Each structure stands twice: as structure tokens, then as C-alpha cells.
Length: 247
Image (cartoon, rainbow, N blue to C red; front, top):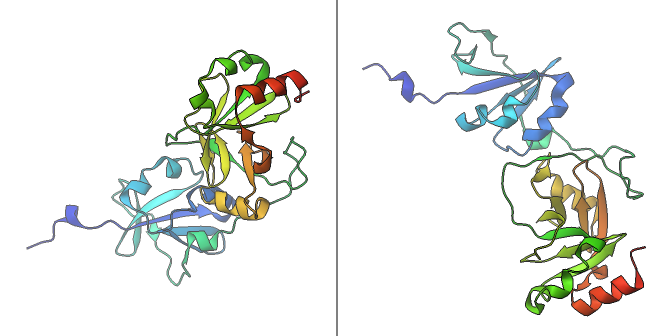
């Protein structure tokens, strides 16, 4: 009896010009993927069916996905092959072959001496808020009205004219919300462009884990020393407001 083609496991290959290989960082955490290179092309294999139709793949420029059949490469939906698959390629796991680098840049407007070019992108998952950055003048009437049991679960510090609150559940105040990942505070709705960047940044910029790294959408960050955080209370907030410590 002939084999039912619909039950065959599809095997995929893909290619992208070596000039565009930097964009592969967005799928670097797909550990099932292996890559190989020749003179002008980066080859990839190991994709699952779900990965081949993912948003990450669709957004890669000059990326061509093939189905491999008996050594021939067919584009999606094509009845005629484009070419033969290269042989004698040296394959390596993508997360080992693509090394993340930390180039010098001058994007950090917070004035930090050590700078790194980091990209954030809109995230596909929802995360609970863990921190809130509020303008003090906009919340000074609201803090005294909060019940004590809500305040006692929150730590806070002052950043110029703003107050940063950390803890859950967060206070119902106007401001910008953040979620936490591996010691980072990321804007709500955003995540690192490279998902495994989190631990690398901590090792390079927060070895002692004594800081929170507060990120903006443009990849700039501000280190917040954990020792500068203090329990939130009406009295501590009023004292800060009275002395105008943020000016």
C-alpha cells in the first residue's frame, strides 16, 4: 500500500543572505534550530510547523523558507523545486553560532558610563505589573488616601520628579507600569528583542544583583540601587514631599 503523503513529517530548510544574519537574533532562543554558512548564505534547519508560520519568521527580511524533499528545495506551495540542497555543511545550534555582542553606543540619556545597545519590541504575552513610575505632583493627594495595608506591601524611591513604586498588588495611581523579568523592569507591553538578553545584561551590568535595571522602550536604562528603596508609608511620602527631595 502506498504511503499517505499527508502523514509524512515535513522537513524544512531556509536561507538568508549573510549580510542580513544580524536579524536572526530574534529567533536565537529557538534552540531546535541549527545553522550553517557558506560563502554568501546562512542556512537554517530544524523548524517546527508552528515556527514556519510564526510572526518572527514573517518579519525576517530576505528570508526564504523551503520544504526539503529528496534533497530538493521547494518553496511553499510550489510544485517545481528551486534548487538542490547544499551538502557537506557544518551545522551548529543557533544559540551557539550567533554570539551576542555589546557594541559601544551613546543612547543612554540617563548618563550611565557603561552603555549597551539593546532593543525592546512589543511583546506577545501579557505579564502582571510589578512597578509603577508616577509623577509626584500628580499623586501627592492620592497617597494619604490609600489604606495602610496597601502601602505596607510597597517599596519606593524618588527619581527626579517621579516616584517609583515596586510590589504587588500595585497602587491604583496614574503612571507608567512595568513588569519584571530576571531583575529587569520592562515597560508594560514590551520585551527584549532577544529573549535571552536578560541574563547576559545582568551578568555584565548587575553582577552583585544589588540593583533593578529600569528600561525604556528605546533601549535606555537606569540602574536603581535596591538599598535606596524604602517601605512606603504616608509619613515617608509626606516627608519627601515636604523636603522636595526630587528637585
